[in-house]
Image 1 (cartoon, one colour):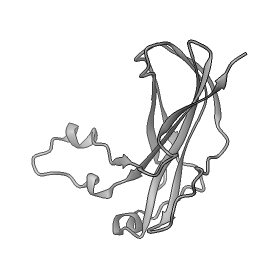
Image 2 (tube, one colour):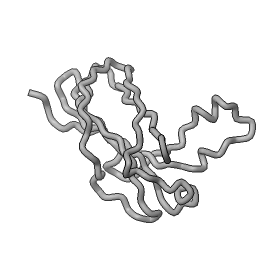
Image 3 (cartoon, rainbow, N blue to C red):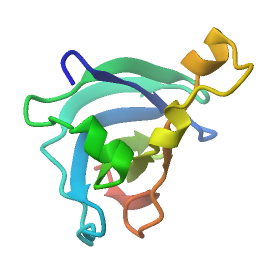
Image 4 (tube, rainbow, N blue to C red):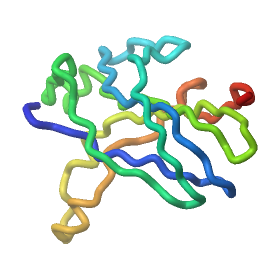
Length: 146
């Protein structure tokens, strides 16, 4: 997949401001039936330092890394499972640190255009579905600052 990127967003869904201190998003490719590790295999995070008020968000395009080569035909056949995994580290307004984890699975069926679907509807589709394995989608407190 030459030139591919993920459209990413970190949004403050909470009721108080927060400072994003680090995040990572990456591709995880495994053979169909191959189990995910209990602990997500993250690369080192990227330092951020972004302040977000309630309901504010930061958006960016995350390019695929050179090692993230995906055999799209194998994904469509179901031979491999492609996931987007990542996390965000943030400090809430009260000085509590949090680790928010994210994981979604690529669903190639969602890339099939529906009859009558407009260009705008097709362009705004989300072809990623929720990963249900524990430890991949949560928000856990990790301590206090200071």
